[in-house]
Image (tube, rainbow, N blue to C red; front, side, top):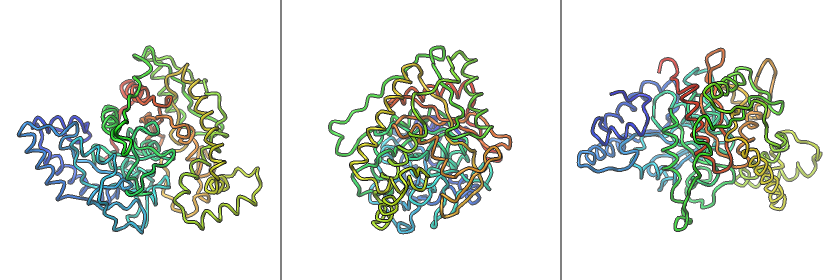
Length: 484
């Protein structure tokens, strides 16, 4: 029976019915890692012996009629920003090169409690704070569609491993597009969950001993089909630490019944962040596929908000969150520079410094602004179920590890653009905690994948996933890179 690019949950059913053995599935993926990983460098740590022991136990359990759960005996890799008990977790941080967590991140534990087997970790950038996956410990991860190009970040190793068939399922995290952009670059599916529904405890940084969870950052699954995203999200939305005794999640059902009642706004391009022509074309074609299949599709509708103002709000909140873990000297420099700066300086570099130095008083003002933007989205989603828009303005690009991100540049439609513009489309929907399902929608002229994000109102995860399933059925499903 075929294992490659099969649904992780279908594999679990086959293992439980003994159509496949967990050990055989594990050995299959280990052989894929051995064959392809030297070129990709997506999987950066292995836990082979413990994985084999757990696979043998899973097979014994299946033979005895025991059911470990919906991922019974399925081997998976885990993004190396999520702590794994007994398996090195570096998070791209040189000081953590020998870090062996004593506990699992909550999301990882949920996969294990569902019967999964963790057999490896996948690469991330330093502190998961870049949109390319490379660090001083493990080096750079390549894109399976073109190894001269980045796989994205920060869940880049995870998305590349799924695309290359090194693992059937992953977990990503996203504070700046880190699930959606790698999914777009590698041609896979991913889900950025609504903020707060999946525990981020055990993410590195800040690490397994930190009890608070970051603003904006979310956890979500990455796979090769919407079916896996839906079932994995159900697993991940569980116990929430000290909130567990009273915590219960009841996500609303999708806001539409079938494709005939689906209302889609297509936002394929915008002067706020002009998009590569192939990406805009692919997203428009995805909207046209839904239109021809019977959905109500509007190519002009937009929410009543200022994308530029939203981006400034997002930039401040993002860097306030990330800055909390930075050294005092960085904070002191940001405070001094911004105090002397021109108030009209809205450059990316200055907005980053303003965010790092943001006072609690000013954070509360920015949060109120964010909530007003969320209310504008809510009003928009009274008329539309989802909006289909870019995950990023550019496809996967050649590796560029210039230390100063503000000095990096990208060429799009013949024009030179700022590297930091990568945050614009992802921040547009992330800032207000909205769910977004990343879906493949096409390819560029030179064969690189193109993805989009399907977005809905806060807590509308069932809606984005159901719409993504319709795109998978009526427009484009997962396609493997050549040679894999």
